[in-house]
Structures are given as C-alpha cells and as structure tokens.
Image 1 (cartoon, helix red, strand yellow):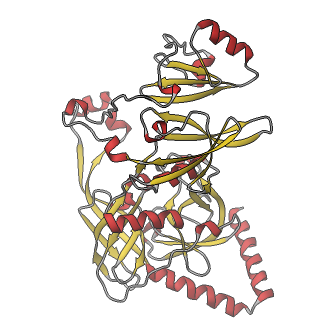
Image 2 (cartoon, helix red, strand yellow):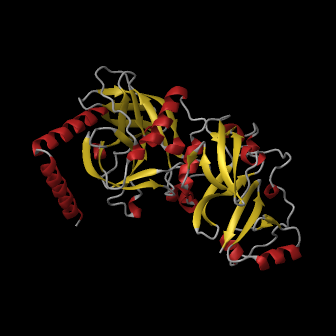
Image 3 (cartoon, one colour):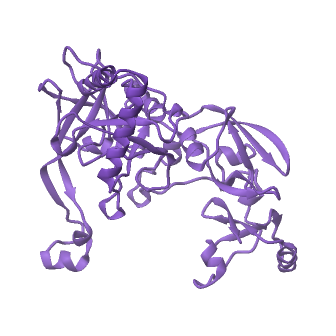
Length: 441
C-alpha cells in the first residue's frame, strides 16, 4: 500500500511538472540541486571505547552469573558508529552532525562524495540538542546554505540526503508530515520537523533540503523500532540548529541562561482559550525573585509570541547567561511586562567539591518574592497511592501553599476554598525548593 501511495504521489508530481514546464527542465533543475546537496553531504565513521550497557547487564542476577561485581563495567574498545554530516562552511571545513554520531570518539573519519577520506576533529558538541560540529581541512569543498525552516508547511516537498546503511549520498523524497513535534523523549530540547522521506540507520546528521537545495533541517532519525516508525522520521529545524551551531563554532560549547520556570498549555477563563501558564517555579530563581508567579499566562518572550511548551523551552535555551529578557504575562486579567536577567544554568547546577554531594544542587534561601515559595501551609503527611490526589501528582512531604490561588492557612479555610471551587481545582505546592501548580479536574 505504501509503495502504491508513493507511486500515486510521484505520478501527481510528474503531472504537475508537465503542466507547468517541460519535463526535462523540471528533472534537470531538481537533479542539479540534488547534485550540489550530495556533494555537501558526507559519511561519518567514529571509533571509540564505549561502555556496554543493556537491561541484561544491569540485572543483578545476570551480573552474579557472569561474575561481574557491582561497579565493574564492560568496555568495548574500537566500537564504531556511522552517520552523516553536512558541510556548512567550505572555507573552514565546518560540518554539522548529530552529537551521538561522534560521542566519546577517539577517531573520526569523514568520507566525501569524491571518495576522499579525511580525519576530522571535534569543534563542539551539545548533548541536549544532539547537535555537534566537526572540522576537516581539504580543498574543493562544497557547502550548503541554511534555509528558513519557519517557512515550511505540512505538505511541502523535501528530500533527505545521507549515508543510510553505509550507502553514501543516498537521496530520498517525501513531504513534511508535521511540524513542532515534541514530547518524544528523544532529546532534552525538541521541536522536530516530521517527514515521510525514507530514513534508515546512518541518515542521522544528514540533510533535509528543499528543491532549491537549502538546508532546512539536520536529520535526527526515527523513533525506536518498537514504536512502529514506518514512514516517520524527524529533523532538527534549521533556524534552531543554526544558532546552536554558531555558538559551538564560537565557544565550543553551549552556555545556557536559567530562568527557573516551565509552562504548560492550560484553559484559562470562560472563553475556553488555551494559554501557556506557569506551572513550575524554582524558588530563589531569577524568575521568582523578579516577580513571576504560578498561574501567570506567558504571552510573549522578548516581543515574540510563544504558542507551545516546546517553543518556550527552546527559546529560553538559546538565551545566554546574564541575558536581559522581557517576559509579557497576563495575571488576573491584566497584562504586565517583566524585565528579567537570566542566571547561568551551569553555575546553578554546579556541584560542591566533596563527592558526597556530587550531582546535588544547592540553593541558599533568601527573602522570597512568591507566596508559593513560602511553606506557610500544611505539609501532606500521607497521600494514598490509590487516591485522586496521588493520581494528580500530590505526594507526601509536599507543602500545600494555596488552593485556586488563595492561601491555604487553616483546615476551615481549605474546606471553604474547596466548597467554593467550581469544577477544576488548582493546588499550589512547594516540593524540594520548587513551587508547582497541580490542576485536578
């Protein structure tokens, strides 16, 4: 059935081309464009010593049978990972790829379209976005220009070029199947282009292009096989990827500013409109100290509207430490404009020197700007696992600071607030230094 649908799609394209221009001109133009793209797409092979890990090796009984003491790891030397990359700067030899393709590499080889095999060095890598930049030195390189991924619409025709299964410069054709895909749990920052262009192992890091040969996305790959990924593949949008790449070339790493909030889509008001509402607020964060509150509806960041959780998270991730940002919010029907200064995410998460506190994040209390960050309500001593409260996310040890935005200062007050609630109830809690808003239908 899929092959039949592809046949119909190809027939429709040919019919359109024939009605608008000579077929030979259409074929030649598209072929010429792909020829340039294929010259800019490289095969990548990285070799490293990697720790072997899987469910079996993590099983205590299996480790006992194999005679593996706790803490002993199996290291595979000379492990090879293959993928693709795209030359984005012919003068300096910069190549963008996925960070997992070159992770922990001891040696990286790049194969060009003309057959040359060159050694590459790592310029910078960013695990949270799975993007990396490597560099080669060679004459006669061909580079692609970044395109505008924001111009893409579902149904636009695209081509993917890479080295699937070791087949260098393979081109596949399809359409944009979806935009703004997130919540897949693949990377920390997700806002993928979805396409039905055929992608296979080895395509990762390759190019997603339009008919003009512009780089619209860096291929991320497909979901795991058990997810039924036939006809589904993802690429990192060019306008997001290019900013990460630029920072990696300049600094070798990504230094992210820390705002200290997260948002979720929630229905606000009787008009049933959905807004991005602050549902998590880190106490003593830059946002909390400078006036952001749980329940604020975020309407714009630096003057640009944000419509999804992923778009907001990604936009903040591109801001540098100490950046001055303007956050437009709506609170209790009134619009406000907050001017905030971001903190350094690395310094916030820096670990103390003693190994006993490795990976522990510390925040010293200061006077709080938010009632949600002041534990002046009751602490939940027990939350049964079969209760509605537990299913909603409440846990033992949480401080209940407010109900529907009103202080929960006493048992009678709590009862009055619950009696007055009409439909959905919101609970503001304080848990381990972070304020959360939990909504219960």
